Image (tube, rainbow, N blue to C red; front, side, top):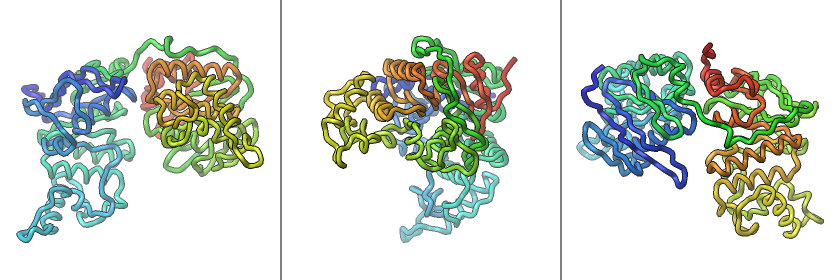
Length: 501
């Protein structure tokens, strides 16, 4: 494995978004003829690194070097022109164009009359597929292609632009074992031809099978760059995790009460299968797992936002009507969604109107909603949650992300729920506000509320949960008590690995 010179070097790059430092002084090399894994927990900074290499973001400080020269990408077109191609988890093809047209997009061959040379375009696509060792019809529309075939079209597109660096961001998340094997055969052939491959995956068996080198990140920082052959899976996982949890997670010890929620055999074909768990009063149960494991989808089905094919949901012993958020709310269930801007709030409306939306009918008199009643109800909960605001009549979109999250919580807590489902409760908010949200969740549980928390942050899961249900690819992989759970044991279950002795 030659290390004469790196094809691409990331040198001490940093990138912040407001007060959030997404990447802090990260450096690593990419060598031609190698597949290089980039690993870390959700939120470790991997996606920000990819977007800097793709020209979507520019580093605040530090440099990118390509073939020994410093480069600056003003946008994705610059990165593409420099020979860097990105294959995302969800391909971005034009569905109504043919496979050949997608490959040639932006670089179509022309006849002498300056018209698109379709014969040459199809011949180029066929040549590229022969090089990749696969067969796809260049004339068929992209619509209807499997995810695996769409990714092959994206790779052919990268080859057509003579890409020297291929970045693959979770490319196998939606593929079958057979499709993964075919993709890896293609990647190995590109690697052996001298391309540098940056491979992002949560599946360690894929990393050890495909990659020669690995860079490990944690909390936006570089932890290590090593040869894969010199590390075990245990080594990689241990370097990915490890923090002091006590300051951020003021968890109160509560004796759980009666069973409030029972989920039995819940199945939605292609999304999740045979999911079962329960939640007691006063208990915080976390749904953990990797992105795409089906955590949010399960809870949306429980709340009635999405349908399910089989299984049952019981609340306080009574079967909950499927596909009916109204029935869930009437029973005493509240859902704080992951995307607070799109699903949790109406940004143009006032703070007080957002807080009282679920209770508008109860607050109305003779069918009319009066400002005084609305303001009083909103004031009670915004004060309880210590929401920082100018006036309750201000548009909720003017608040910071953390205070918007508090408004979403206020909106649902004002309904007096007995079960609170919170999906990614602290995503995108600062550390101080995170601690406040955690303190609130712990206090609510201590008062007897049953809480289900969906979270991608392992420290949050370990710091706040009484029990942890780990999902992997739509199935329950493990259920761990607070005493049993460690970052390593949760990560092992989420990735399908046996817990090390």
